[in-house]
Image (cartoon, helix red, strand yellow):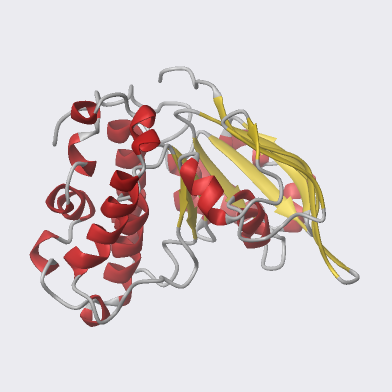
Length: 282
């Protein structure tokens, strides 16, 4: 595994309050180029609110947000997108009356309008193969045969894939995925996890992934952040480090940790394979 690169996004003591409720409590975290990071925690831990702050959807009450070296605290989502950040939501946000291909096409127009976008990848010819056009993105996410269908006709799991494709169409450097595996079958969940690794390995993206399917997530990420009651209680670079009494009490439980650690595979943190070389389809 190649070493992670420069910091693309940093939260410095970020707090989000709603009246008397502290949803995110002085959380600091940084995300470097090439990382695959998981964020876990029980319901109400502040995970989605933290994502909303990271992407400009929610203005922090205090703290700072720095995207690729630029202070964007309080800026809107479009400013974060301009610095190479894209995200999905718990409930997929697609244009149901438009075709699957048209949903992807909107993002490509957004990326192509702004010449500064190209510095993210160098010259236009260096844009990863899968992000160059609608067909490439649909092939990557497995929706090539559904290109002409209305997005509203897709199954819920396909709509989740489409929203990932819409995020990718903006050609980001950092992708925030908010519970993209919710409601999926076990087979669909594993397919989604493999897709997420491909996004990091083949496109060289930084991916930050919130998920309740903890055992699957722990087998695929290299670092995991644990939130509880708005606080960060762990930031582990090895899965074994989350087997901490406070983490277990807050969320995981002995059985969930034991299951995750007893299922080694090529995807585990300790034995993750070297990255695939970007630049061509498998």
